[in-house]
Length: 87
View (cartoon, one colour):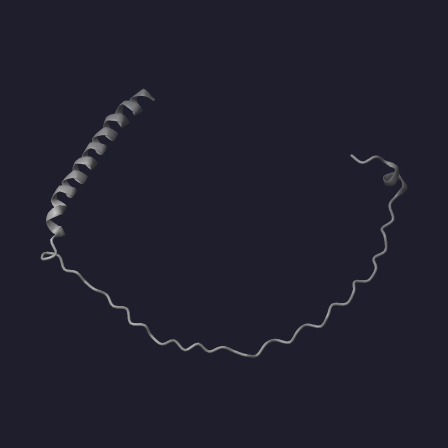
């Protein structure tokens, strides 16, 4: 386990240092491209299209009212279940 940490720590530090150097280099060389004479600016214009929406006026018929549910008979419990205490 010590060998894995001893290998990974310097490798991670080297990758971090390289990334910082590359980012610094990109920032320093990026100032020259901010001039508007060198860069082309593309202007997009959105043309709004007329949309035709067709809606249907017909509504579905209402369902018939529900009938009352019939009375359900009470289930009969065996005498041994009725007298035993609940767990």
